[in-house]
Image (cartoon, rainbow, N blue to C red):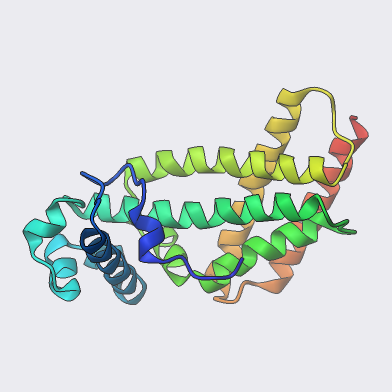
Amino acid sequence: MSEPTTGLDRAAGLASLRRTPQQARSRARLARVLETAERVLIDEGTGALTTTRIAAEAKVSVGSLYQYLPDRGAIIEALAAGYFAKLEATADALAEAATAERWEDPVGVLVDAYAEIYRTEHGFRALWFGSGLTERTRAADRAHKRRMADGIRRVLLALDVPLPRDDEAVARACHAAVLAADALAQEAFRRDPQGDAALLDEAKTMLRGYLTALTARS
């Protein structure tokens, strides 16, 4: 769950790619480009993510880079897609684990799992706390949060948490929980690279109360 996202993970199936590499050599080149972009992002922020800079540091030609990532926006979108995939894979793993385990505090498990991603994925924090997000990235994030909400719903179902019969109400509640948790997590990690523990605890308290109120509607 805490393994770092790799450039190869990001190279597959990204909407921001002008075309998808098929050969192993091309895939390795794209992976190197994305790993380079992430390093520059962490060290210097989104403003440094120019195509010429990334091509030079990745030791590929600008023309080769343009085949896949035509501009800074595409680089940002590709990096964001990798981070979204990491979060969604965590949601899938948690839903699977919940089928075999019984968690006394599901909210605590979920918040701690996602806080660990914020803690270890320095590029994710650098991207989200910067000022260079594209509108396509923001739109992708909105869709991503919907998928995360569905992951939360699957976890609750796997744990046999009593939920309202109104599927739309459950989906709305899970989406609201994701939006609130994300806002609090971002603030916690703006305050402290390891996450402000007191604020993360407040997030858990709030979400536990919300879950209690949701189950009371069942």
